[in-house]
Image (cartoon, rainbow, N blue to C red):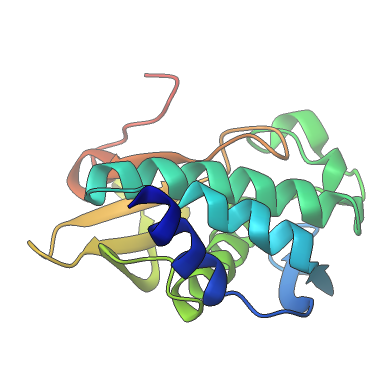
Length: 179
């Protein structure tokens, strides 16, 4: 049965490479097209082959975002991006939360367009602004069965690390992997 599900997930992937528009250098100052090869698409698809529920799908999403970032870093200077903003300030390829939320949303649409997201739908990026300081943006997904929102946030980590996923309300209250 698992093999059949895996083969069905591969069927939904195109036989050719696909392009994704990304951005970097803070505030999406630089835009680029990256190409996800068929082999890379299969690698990503394998993460979703046996997901039985929404929680497992969120784990696969986190891992997939790390892979997308790795693939982007092989084609752009984003491989230099470090978690947060302080450790890569001024470096070509740096990404702030606007870049991360934009790119992660594009990656999520890529997954959705290929039928790999069965338990979630992609929503527009969301921001938190505690007392109008430290404004922070992240990608957003909604669990289909209960309409519960989750943030997908890759900004906290160096390029290629799996994304952090938070309950929206917890994230809005300031949750981070460092808390």
